[in-house]
Amino acid sequence: MGEPLFEDCIKAWQCGPVVLAVIHAFGEWGDTAITESIGQAEVEPNAARLIDSAAEKYGPLSAFDLVSLVRRPGGAWARAYAPGREAETTSDAIGASADASADASRPDPFSATLDAVARNMPRALKMLETS
Image: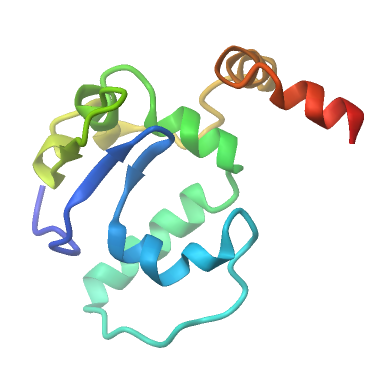
């Protein structure tokens, strides 16, 4: 699998994997697009190519698509997450899971995403209806 790009712990939170340093750096943006840089990081050329490739592959996906993608059965998040429990996953667990060969196409049709929202957040669609 190679060397990890970073050493931070990866938490398995309800909506998917989280790196706390990223939450602390960008949390103020909430659910809006991040439009400003907080600085430049020195990145090795191989790491930069991997990051660019991931951004190209996953960047066009919506938040719902990304949540569906990382929550698929057989993925590292699905193996680590348990409601109400502090859980972590590792780069080794990600490499050994279905995530390592994840297809970046939309993981579920939009209707399946709506069904999941209705199941997990029953009032969310009603709120959208009245707004």
